[in-house]
Image (tube, rainbow, N blue to C red; front, side, top):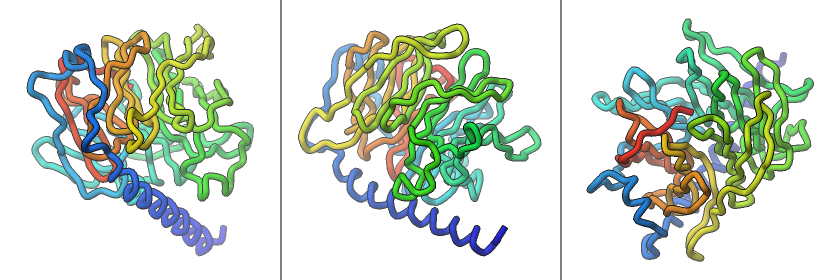
Length: 326
């Protein structure tokens, strides 16, 4: 391998990602509505803890994503353009958990407590072993490189379901080896299968509390789809679960990361804030955020705080309901 060329290409990739996301931050952060109230319902208000508001936890990041709560009592999240996984501890504040993260995006812990990361730069899903060694869980389909894995969730049997849009590729096309943007299942034995190929920009992904329904956001189509999970892990009965078109002309953005609470309500980051749907697909309203959010995750010891990564800031709000684990 030409080491100089490898490092030059890597630096070029990181620069492209940084400039692209920085431009997005400059545009979309300012588009969060200030005068148009978001839609709401009494059902949404009952989900939010009495007197709770969106609180800023930390800021001055590049573009943050992938919040996940560690069982030892701290939050991990990614800063994609700065190529880091960050750590926030209730007592110690913010620190760098991992440098050179391969532009990691979505994060999750498997049932053995090992960190799984969707890495844009390496175009793979990685796993951090108990020893601290980082290995590749999957990076190719039939010999072809994945686009840039984005987000992931675990089925009850430990299988990994993940989305693979082209967001991490330069111009979203350079180096693309697959002619689709898919949703995948990686079995505990390491078998990779394509579940769905017809997404335009598959993004956030998550399961219902009973793991019988899979939700997947399609950012480009401004909606979230739901699928029945069959006994063999494949999907059936795909349908539009919820539409997420901005409620006013001055609001821009689309569905991104998502999580689900124990009652089956689905929380999806999107234009203006975190959109909340009940398990039937009814829109309960939007939890407005100061910056346009990219992802969210439940945390704290009781799993009743919703942490939100929103462009340059990390936010949170207390709820009256517990979240499920991704």
